[in-house]
Amino acid sequence: MDDQTQVPTAGPDARSAPAGPDSLATRLPPHLWFAVSAVFHYLGPAFAVLLFPHVGVLGMAWLRIATAALIFAPVTRPWRTFARADSRTRLLLLAFGACLAVMNCSFYLALDRLPISLVAAIEFVGTIAIALVGLRSARNLAALAIAVTGTLLLIDVKWSSDPVGLFWAFLNGALFVGYIVLGHRVARAGAGDGIAGLGAAMAVAFVVVLPIGFADALPAFFSPPLLIAAIGVGICSSVVPYVCDQLAMARLPRSSFALMLSLLPVTATLIGVVVLHQIPSLGDCLGVVLVVAGVAFHKPASAG
Figure (spheres, helix red, strand yellow):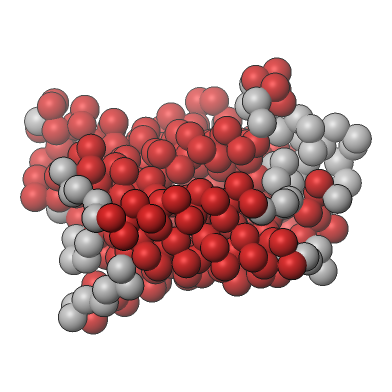
């Protein structure tokens, strides 16, 4: 079934007026929102790795989710979202929130043991299946093949000898698929509901991680510079990209969004150059070109 057929009917403007500042959200193309998300998706985690020695892995995950939850709360009022939602929507928001919590924790646990390029590659693997569901054309199959080839060149398909790290990386990859599926449903729930749903889900995520990383996060509360840095990571990791994802998901077919996620290893490489001073090889550069070409060649299903 085409993923577009799953969109609930919520009025003629449901697809053209996603949550957030309607004028800006509708004026800018969804691909631009995704591009912003792609940059911040690994920018925040790259800085988070530098904070692991000070607040621990789970402490950093706690601070990231707490920051996002506290920023979203006064804007989206998650308690009202839950009060007005029907039982099915509440279950969706609970599942989305639990997914966000465990995904963020497993992502950081993987980054603590594995290179960011390998974690990014494993994260992208699960999205291939989502992209395949909505291909519907030889052109899009070719686009996916080009993007996957570029990704494999980019990350050099190297495997780690750390089974624990790989476990967390694959768990994160599986939950990232859940994030796409559940996030897409929240974004398509109706006009104006996407960001409110995200805020409610983030509140759930905070409740889930509250007892897990609080002890590790405590040192940040006694060091203003460390706390400010952690808050910055939370904004870059869980506020900016998730909001942009919602604005993009509300107007892009799920398969198109999944294919565009092949850009994430590209942004991971570029951020690695800027933040971690990891200079890409010639093969990495070729991979970047192929991934960009694949995404550019892809034709969204909604385009006819």
